[in-house]
Image (cartoon, rainbow, N blue to C red; front, top):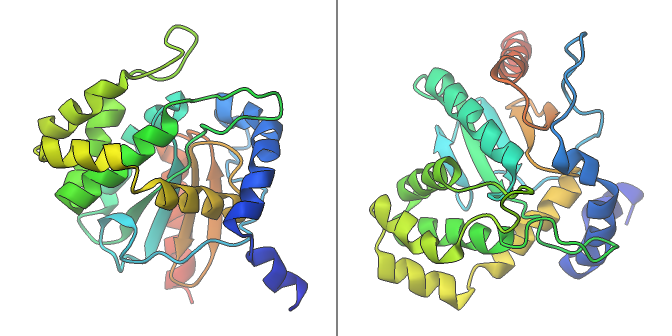
Length: 250
C-alpha cells in the first residue's frame, strides 16, 4: 500500500484517538471565524486530504447532479455555524433554482473532550443525532426544514448560555416543522445514529476539518476549494463563480 492510500484509510477507532488532540490544537478556529484580510484571500491553505464522495446517503439541498457542490461540516451548537447558515440559504436562493449548486450537510459536533478534558459543545452530538432523526422520520425535505428551524431558533453555546439548547425542546422543534413527534422522540432516544454521526466526524478529519463551519466547494472537474469559518456571502459566491468559470473553460 503506498503512502497516499495509507493517508486515506483513517479508521474510526484510530481517528477518535487523535480527535481530542486535533480539537485541542484547533480551538482558535472553532471559537473565531476565519480572518477577513484586505487582499480578500479567504480559502483555507489546508488541503483536502480525503473526503468521501457525495452520495444519496447525504443530506442534499438542490440538484444532486449540480456542477458545484458545497459540503459543509457543521455543529448545531456552534455560534459561527448559526451565523453562516443564512449565507448558505442565500447562496441556494441564487444558485439552487437553476440547478448550479447543491448544499450537502455533514455533522461535525464538537462534543469530544480536548487534551485538557474540556468539552466545547456538550450537546452537539445529541443535536447531530436529532438532525439525522429528522431525516429518517421525515425525509430530506423535513431534514432541511428542521435544520433551518434549529439554527434559527436555538441559542448558541456562549458564556451567557454555556449549555445551549434545552434538549427536551428538540421534539417540539421537530413537531413545529411537521415531523411525527413520537417517531422522532423514539428515534432520538434509541441513539441509532451515533455511528453515522461518528462517521461524519471522521470524514471531516480526513477532509482537513479543524473547526466549524468548514466548507469544501468543488466542481465536476474535481477541483476542491476549502472555505474556513463563517465567511460572508460575497466570498462564497466568488468561489462558486470561479469554479463555474474553470469548468466552463475546459
